[in-house]
Amino acid sequence: MASAAQIRANRENAQKAGRPKGSMSAHNKLLLEKKKWMERQIVNELAGLVAAWKESGLGHFVKEETENGQTKVYKKSPNSQAIKDMIERVYGKPTGSVDLTSQGEKIPDLQAWVYAAIAEGTVGSDEA
Image (cartoon, rainbow, N blue to C red; front, side):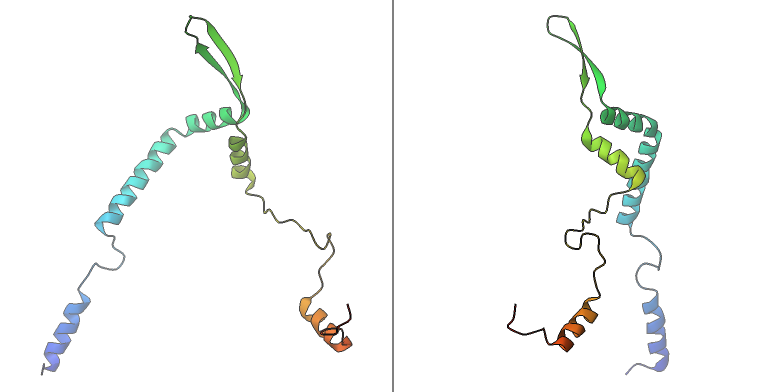
């Protein structure tokens, strides 16, 4: 049987085991460094990225050289997904809920409606 001093020493030693609270594993540190690097790259190119996004959303002109040496200029259609992304970035995503049943009228409290129907005896009757 272990003595009280040995048990106390064992418990103190067990509390030292493992990674200290709040520290990160080497894998998570590497992932964090990669994320920070990617964020810096994006921030450095942000003006160009926003300009390209805007250009894609609004449509833009494209200049091409054909095989016979002629220059062809045409307007590329606006990208509807880019437009949607820009609007949602500024105003947020729409909720998407549509009222199909009450036509804008307030829906009554369901519990009160059930109790009233029970009191009137209309719940469970065969009359339709």
